[in-house]
Length: 292
Image (cartoon, rainbow, N blue to C red; front, top):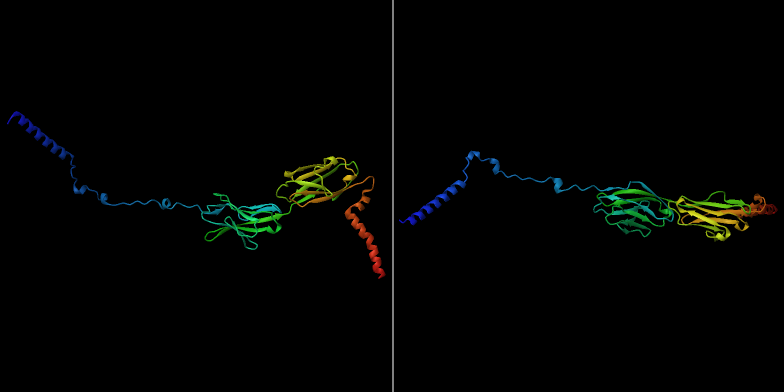
């Protein structure tokens, strides 16, 4: 065999030896049967906590206190609040308890009286009952009910008051010419400030009667209105009426006398004229009965 042939044969033998050695070196040595742990052959299953599968849903509850009292005056707008947390798919209804009349369901008004309306903004938890142009007959208990099993409710009471004007002092005032006439009118039993207060002298509105010396100042926040005439004259005598836009008016009669006895002036006022008239008529009436 030639020298080159011998070299090729040596290379082939060397490659075969290398491949066998590498295969034997990489094969893992088997473990004795006694060293195999049984737990490697067991199947284990882990479940997540139930709270993770079914998260806790917050409980529905009312944020508005039960037996809440709302006071409103006649002619104004009353707002009865009903705030419900976590209402979910619940539906809110308003019921008037004195006659169990269904007023609203959701945002739909079921009453023929369109003064009642449910107010609710999207994503809000407040379901307010709005009553426009409140009347005395609207006073009473109202139920805010949420549909559930069983239904849950709270009750609110609407109190209705009648605002009225009140002029300080007696119902009649006596002054001499040149004296200062000052009248103060306050609005009492009111739940909201008046938008305006008008003063009338007899049948004429005098809020802006500056030429005749009349000065009117009104403070709506304080519910007060003052009328001032620095130098009253005979032309300023008569009936004065304070008329707030949201209250019952009040009146006072002013006498302007010139050196006369104020007691004698009483006969000139409307109320005293009527009393004197009946005093004069009574003796004649009795005399006619006697004659019969």
